[in-house]
Amino acid sequence: MNRSGKLMEMLTGYAASHRHPFNVFVHMIGIPTIMLGAFVPLTWVGLDIFGVNINLAHVALFGFFVFYMTLDKLFAVVFLVFALFIAQLATTIGTLPLATALTIAAAAFFGGYAAQFIGHAVEKSVPVLVRHPIQANLAAPFFTVVELFKFLGLREELFDQVQREIEHELRS
View (tube, helix red, strand yellow):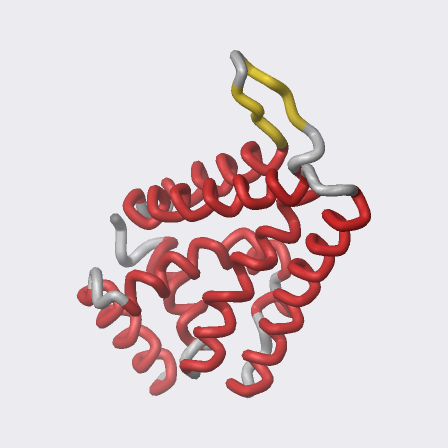
């Protein structure tokens, strides 16, 4: 992992606007909820390949996984495990009657985003989504995994370096 490269730049930028514990907590719940809401309609388009249903939610999560592998392999693999669970849940919801599935998907998607904005209001920071919507949506699931590692006390040297970078930027 090149800690002075793209990963460190992304982690530092993210961590700088996600310091309040409530905001971090809300993101840990809200981001997977948004993914669930987005994945439900994607499950409606798929193919059976050798008896295995592959839908657009699987394709999307694989795309995220490939991108995340360029940042950090361990974080990417952990993301894949969690994302497969979310995709499976979305697939199950997607088999419900259309009105029910759409209601759950919309509630998850918009509710997850509302939670993000509430978290940032508490933190008194502007969500990255406002400044860089594409970057925010591509990176947010990755940061959920990163926050999980931080919460569990894993890879502390990485988080210590991120904190030093943030403090350096605040002094500059």
